[in-house]
Amino acid sequence: MKTTTAKSLRVSKKEGVRKPILAFLKSLLTDAVFDAILIPMQVPAGDSYAWVLVKDPSLLDQANPLAPIMPVQGAKALKSLTRKGEGNLKIAAVMRPCEVRASVELAKLNQIHLESITLMSVDCPGVLPVADYFENPGESEKRFNAMLSENRWGNGSMKSVCQICEQFSILPSSDFHFGLMTGSESSVVLISSSPKGQRVLKDRSLDGSVSLSDWENGIESIRQERKKERTKRFREVQSMVEGFDGLLKTFARCIGCHNCQSACPICYCRHCYFGSEASKLDSDFILKKAEQRGGLSFPLDRRMFHVGRMSHMSLSCVACGLCSDACPVSIPVADVFSFVADQTQRTFDYKAGEKREEPLPIRQYRLEEIKGVEEWVKDAEGVES
Amino acid sequence: MKEPFHPKIVSFLCKWCTYSGADLAGTSRMQYPPSILPIRVMCSSRVNPVFVIKSYLSGSDGVLIGGCHPGDCHYQSGNYHTRRRIAILKKVFDSIGLETERVRLSWISASEGSKFARISEEFTGKIESMGENPTKKKVFL
Ligand code: SF4
Ligand code: SF4
Ligand code: FES
Image (tube, rainbow over all chains, first blue to last red; front, side, top):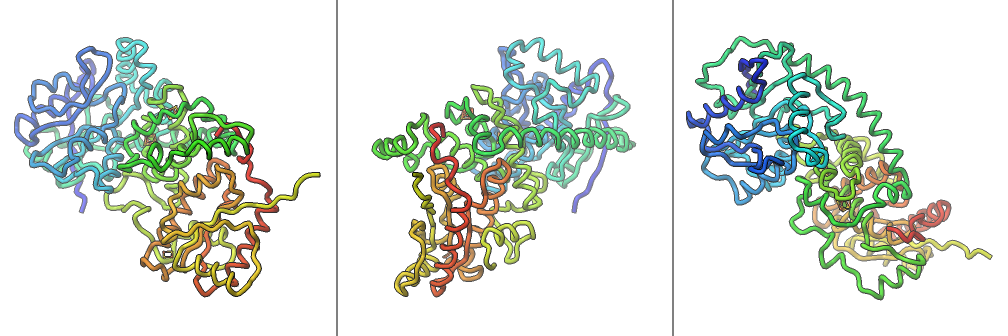
């Protein structure tokens, strides 16, 4: 049973939302509610962010639960942390909603262990493309903070996937949530939605007389706008990739580096076919292929890589956009993948990472399948079931 | 004169059913088109979607996946997983505008030699009407 409790943190307009959130997290560390907190922190050079597992409460002053960029997906950090199973420490992971969702997907694949982890999500205004940020980190920080304090969400300078993200707020799968979109702008709402989350609010002396409706309305109105935009953008992406020639064009610049895959939090196969021995061809065979076609371009099999990846992982894609950030030749990889993912996930009425109890569609089946799928296969099969 | 189009259909056939069905069609001297290039697999669920994509991008005009009827898989549930995987693959093809009709999943048992012959015939006809795989002559893949 889900039990939801809400409280709130006071925010002064001058300070912004970060300080009170960090102070709250600090109290959780000093009061030993958690043994450590995993959170983004600016690197010493001041030009990027890294995930840091914080033990010393004073270090939290440098943390940033709302970093302007996402150079490494949080689920990747959590995966390295819990790779060998759950530990004994109680850890809180403060993440963007798409990071929570990726973590939940990986947990379903037994690649992350969530037993001792409390997933804390924050309302996400989006993140900037890393390339834009790196051009001038100082300026970018200022720009991002201004957007945040003026409540200009869904801003055009965020990553394209962020601009059409509908799951930027509380999720059924997170334990605890920081709601920032408060109409009054003078408080952050704290919502616990699981027994682990309840532990966080227990014994905190906080303002308990919160009404969530302002916040909920704020979220909903953004969501409605995004929904419209999303339909429009997806249509554009679809016409861009349409047909084999569309696919060729969209990925024409691809240099086959597979960075998109390495940055992806989801790509979960321990040994990927692409790049494996099995994928290598002998030269006679390649020559024959070249002969049939008049010529053959290298690196080999770039389109196969992309379509293969879609068929393997799109059911769990969380549209975080890390693949686009990672592409050295600026291909809008995430726009294509999140569109395809929307389609495949719809087929199974599945939303990656939204609910922990929903099993991965590829690990299950029904004797009589849900209509769409069944008919499809029947169609393709033509004859009988 | 243009050469007539003889399609090639890479066919992944389950050893326990469709492959034996194809054998039966052969030993019973049933006619079926030479377009079918059978590859024996231990179960239809052995077919990684990448095999299908690879066949398609290597110029195969059609790809057939043959498995045991639902409920009859030698490994209990392999074919149910196949059904989901192929559904996903077709949805991927569909969303990026590749021709889903070139991929076909059929349930054919070891005793259904005639069904194998009929489906081969029918699928070959369908591919003939669709024409050559458009990726066949591409230099950039
Ligand atoms: S494919 Fe791209 S957008 Fe989807 S989960 Fe992987 S990195 Fe994120
Ligand atoms: S990161 Fe970009 S260039 Fe590298 S494989 Fe992916 S799409 Fe191709
Ligand atoms: S054994 Fe034939 S489909 Fe699994």
